[in-house]
Amino acid sequence: MDLASQYAAIGAEIRDAVTKVLASQQFVLGKEGAALEQEIAALCGVRHGIGVASGTDALILALRAIGVNAGDEVLLPPFTFVATGSAVSALGARPVFADIDPATYNVTSVEIARRLTRNTRAIIVVHLYGLAAEMDAIREIAEQHGVHVVEDNAQAIGAKYKGRPTGSLGSIACLSFYPTKNLGAYGDAGMITTDSAELDARLRSLRNHGQSSRYNSSEPGWNSRLDEIQAAILRVKLRHLKEWENARRANAAQYSKLLAGLANVEVPHVPNNREHVFHQYTIRAQRRDELQKFLTERKIGSAVYYPVPLHLQPIYAGLRHGAGSFPEAEKAAAEAISLPMFPELRAGQIEYVARSIAEFYGK
Ligand SMILES: Cc1ncc(COP(=O)(O)O)c(C=O)c1O
Image (cartoon, rainbow, N blue to C red; front, side, top):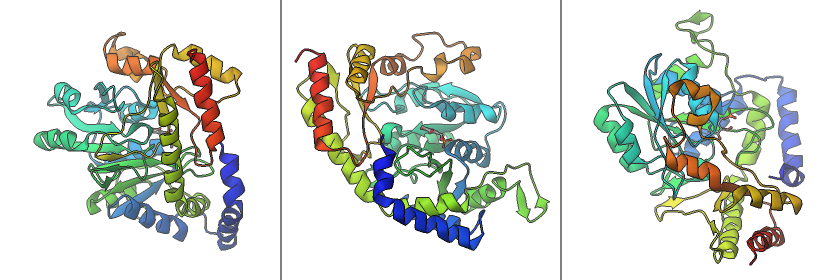
């Protein structure tokens, strides 16, 4: 990820937007935030967007708003960033893991059906790396059992499933604007999207001390608001998001073409009914750790998202899931490696990465 090249291209627009906020002297819950909420809601194909302080807060508040309480079970994949699980734990609810599809890295409807109990209150799907999960089948199970589907859309803004944008595919969805995300702020920020006016109203109160009107709190809430400077920066970047998304897709296509002949790696699979936004370009690689070392020696950045699935991290040791409990998540954790991916990546750089991988495998 090279944020400097992005800033070089749009720095003047960003500085202009920030200067306007400074001149307005309005820093919290002002017109930039309100405009961003509308623009993001429109992009996600829903009526409401609620700006919050981070993607993690978006998850905690969304779960709280749909009624997840201490002791409830919440289904989620173990192959995700820890925030997906710790948001559940923060409310005193119990994470129940469901394994992933090896082709898409996303939680499967079959696993969800298998792990659902009468205590299940919600299902969190994570659209990992920028690819939507199999939403129809998951939503059908959720509807049958009267539970909510929460989309962890932190990595997939702009992605589509059967022509519909992520962020509109469940009851409620959570975005992260962490700086390295496809739409990244210059600090922490997040948003919740939903079509429900009721959830929108509840969330506006929850993010602002549970106040239903000023100095009149009706329930314990948080201070979790998206500030005006970040909103103004995000609005500038939003104007470029589509072109960046197309560049990411073109970069991914070039990687996949160059790596297609290698038996030792598996390139990302994109089902026909989905549009991937390639937050990450992640391959499965034999001898992954050795490959990563080799790439580092060649000054090629790479990252492993995620080396330890949630069920094997110390935070969930108490749940007593041993190795082998979620075999697909564990296999992905051992094989996945994400290659350099950002819109400004040049064709020659992609060729150098692909050539280096081929050389590693002696091709
Ligand atoms: C899948 C996933 N969920 C949740 C989060 C949490 O978002 P944030 O870092 O904005 O709190 C992130 C990003 O960091 C993420 O990648």
